[in-house]
Amino acid sequence: MTETAVHTQSTQNMTVLVTGASGKTGRRVAEAAEAAGYTVRAASRSGAVRFDWYDPTTWEDALRGADAAYLAYMPDVGAPGAGDTVGALARQAVALGVRRLVLLSARGEDQAEPAERAVRESGAEWTVVRASWFAQNLSEGPLLDGMRAGELVFPAGEVLEPFIDARDIADVVVAVLRPGSGYAGRVVEISGPRLISFRDAVAEVSAAAGREIRYVPVSAQEYGSALAEFGVPPQETEFLIELFETNLDGRNAHLSDGVRQVLGRAPRDFAEFAREHAEAGVWKA
Image (cartoon, rainbow, N blue to C red; front, side, top):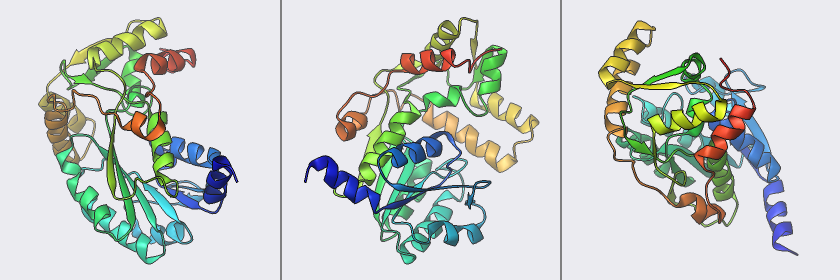
C-alpha cells in the first residue's frame, strides 16, 4: 500500500468538527480538510451544524461523534473569559470521545495563554498553532470597509509583521491533524515569508488594486475611542486597546518556519495574496 493510500485510508475514517466554519480560517480549514479526505462537520452560529461559543447548549450535538476538532475562538483567543470557555469545551469534547484538538492561537499574544493551557490540560491529544497577523484581515471583516473607502486607520505604527495567508494556516491545521503527523503535544508557530509594515502592506494592496488606499496610523487609545463610538462594549474595547499596545509593539517582527516545517514548502507571499484578491475585485471602491 502506498503512502498516499495509507493517508487516504486514515483520513476517510475521521470526522473533524470545524468551529467558526464561516470565518477567515474556519472556512478554509473545512475546505482543506474535505480535500484531504476527512469527513468535515462545518459548524457555526447560523450553519446547518449550530455551534456558538457563548451558548454551551450547542456544543454537545456539534461534538458528538467527531474524532477531532479545530478550535477558533471568537472574537479572539486572548479575550477575557476565553480560557474558561475553551477549557469547558475541551473537557466536554474529551468526555464525548473527541481525541484530537487543534487550537488556533496567536504569536506573541500573552493573553492567549489561559486558552492554550486549557487545551493542554484537557486530556486530549492537542496541538496549538500560533499564527502571525492574517493577510485576510485586510480583505475580510471589519477592516475591509475602510480599505474600500481608500483608507486604513489602524494602531500599528510602522511595526513590521510577517503577514500570513489564511490558506497556509488551513493547510498547516489539516496537516497536523493527520494521524501520525508527530505534532500532538506540540506548539507550532507560523508566519509569512517576509517582514513588511502595515504601511507597505497597504501600499502593495493599493498598487495591485490600481487605486489609492492610504495607511493612517493612530494610537491604540485613539482607535479604542473610535470603537467605543461605534458601540463596541467597554470590556471588549479595553481588551483590544491592550492587545494592540502589546502585540503591535514589535515583539512579532520576526519570521517563524512552521509552514515549511509542517508542509515542506515556503508560505505564500503577501504579494500573491494582494494580486489574487485585487483581481477578484475585493478592494473596489
